[in-house]
Image 1 (cartoon, helix red, strand yellow):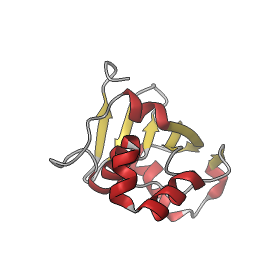
Image 2 (image 1 turned 90 degrees about the vertical axis):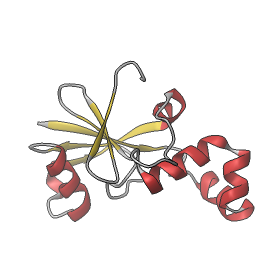
Image 3 (image 1 turned 180 degrees about the horizontal axis):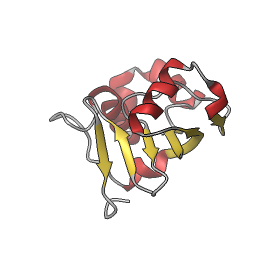
Length: 128
């Protein structure tokens, strides 16, 4: 079954890294609140008191980076981290990295899950 992998477009941009490196993480996150949310999400996942609320602003930042032929979410995670069989990965984006906390996967049935610090966070339809 085909799973769709999403990653943050802001966090993949040169602009994001330039601002983070020029201003410093704290100042960049204050000046660009989305950066702060994405930074906290990638660091803490959704299950920590400092985690951001998954809202439209965060969800709108995601872009499709790959389609993966897999048997389930855990298989997608393994494939996108081990990279032992690239024949099952259809690369959509030019920049793509291994699947990690804060990235999102959509099942063939249309359910979306964010990679969490421990397992998966199901994105509820009313949020999107």
